[in-house]
Image 1: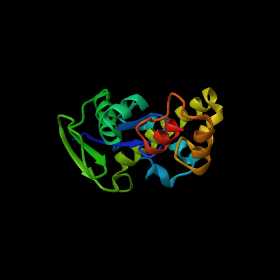
Image 2: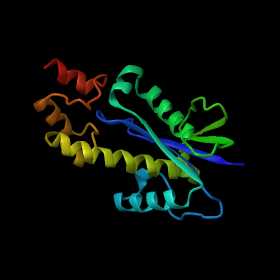
Image 3: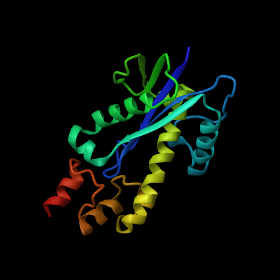
Length: 187
């Protein structure tokens, strides 16, 4: 039975995409150190991301951008990104394990697992791929919009980011449906 894990990164930030990954690990090629991406250093995540891509039976990454998030809300965008990631796999899994308390409709068996990124390696692997990809994109956005310092806070609503948002107003990748961005638009 082919089991796929899926997870997303980027629900909490106020700019940029929500990125999801789907991974089918190879039981014959175990990868040590997989866990929730938030528990790993940036260097360790990058190293594990390369190992996952090299050793998994299949993996895919998908996303919803800020405009889609604003149109359908962050929860629905997270679900859609996970659906896109699973649909993007080059081989079809028999079952999907999802980090969290709900699973979107994948057209195949699915199970939501709270703290799944800690409990199931395939979900942890997806967590790592999604986080590494989202961080990579935020570094690229930093080059385009250096005044927001995305390289430092990755668009999370830190005090520094909120101050920059207040000073400069939102840029095209800010999520206009999120309260801090709405407030900045009004001033």
